[in-house]
Length: 130
Image 1 (cartoon, helix red, strand yellow):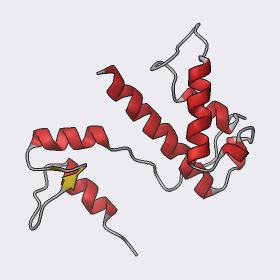
Image 2 (cartoon, helix red, strand yellow):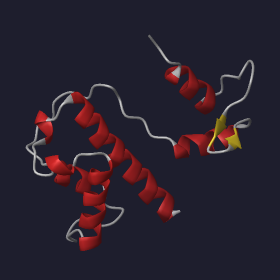
Image 3 (cartoon, one colour):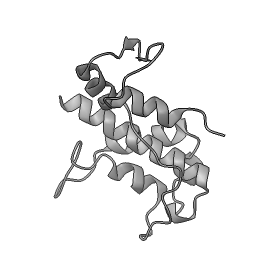
Image 4 (cartoon, helix red, strand yellow):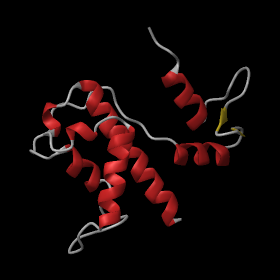
C-alpha cells in the first residue's frame, strides 16, 4: 500500500501543479520553479533495492568514501576528523556494530540506513561548499 511518497516528490520537484493544499519543506512553502529547485537541493533519494555490490568493502569504508572529493581526494588521505565523523554517523543509525562488516552481506534495512547516511553526508558536504 503506497503512502504517497512518489506523488510528493513529483509534485514538489517537477512542473506538475499542486491541485489542492500546499507543500512545505523545512518550513518553506513550495510555489515557484525556484522553490522547486531549492527543494531538490534539500532532498536525497535512496531506492528500496540496490542489488548486491561487487566489491568487498567494509561499512566504515563505504561511508568514508562518501566524503571523497568533498573532504579528501586523490593523493590525499582522509583526516582523523573524517574518520570520527564517519563513526559518529554510523552510531547515529545503529550501524557502529557493523563497522568492519562487508557491505554485500548487510540486510536490506541495514543497506538502506547505510545509503541514507552516505546521501545525507554528500548533501551536507555539497551545501558546505556553496
